Length: 328
Image (cartoon, rainbow, N blue to C red):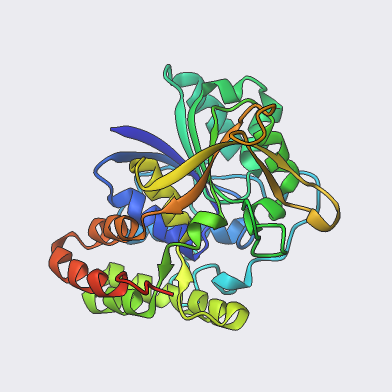
């Protein structure tokens, strides 16, 4: 059983990833740390608390982290997630509970206490991890595995070069990729674009119902609207759930070794510059970068974990939705 610290900025897709992790039989979520990102720190901390309450898991310690990027002013919140970060669907709690210890303190203490190192799933900007490195440069040596959602080898989603999590705090990403962690498993947009929640899959969630089904359907409405307004696509990527699914299923995504560097200024500000070491042989890899995804395997993992009593109905709908022609 793998123990996990999730560093996140909920956010609609963060919330889905948290629910998936809390339902998993293969993972123990030891702690959740929060960081300014999709919405401000107060809001993301409340949203993480909302998910823990929804899943009846208020036993999981929740810690507040950085409330701004490492070296620049706060970036505007992502409009994809609504004003409250959970799609303005009426779920966001105002309960301001959190463990008194901060995220950086917890990351350093937990890694020092784990003889085999800790596993971190980073779903937001990398500010907390960069601050931990700056407090203790030996911190990366005590991390057994770091899986992150962020970056893109090719096209970004905020600018042609930059993905949101990295652009939100590129200086933090620069620190993390240069710090000497085990090869960072970067689940970027090149992979997440392949796991697209179609209208049929979203309707399936509504029909399956229950607290989980209602929550997922309700909070994704604004998320889906954003994809239509920006891209004229009906549906949405499930970025953060894919990063969690990869963590428990090493065969889900094809990964390539690469040297990743971060642009921190100019027209390419926030770009993850990917040097595939199969081609650039003079480069030392510091990452494994996601390329192709088995979309059916992902949606099986997502839906079976959240609706285990409905496997037959899920299989029937996915057979249609993910047949030739796919979800897009």
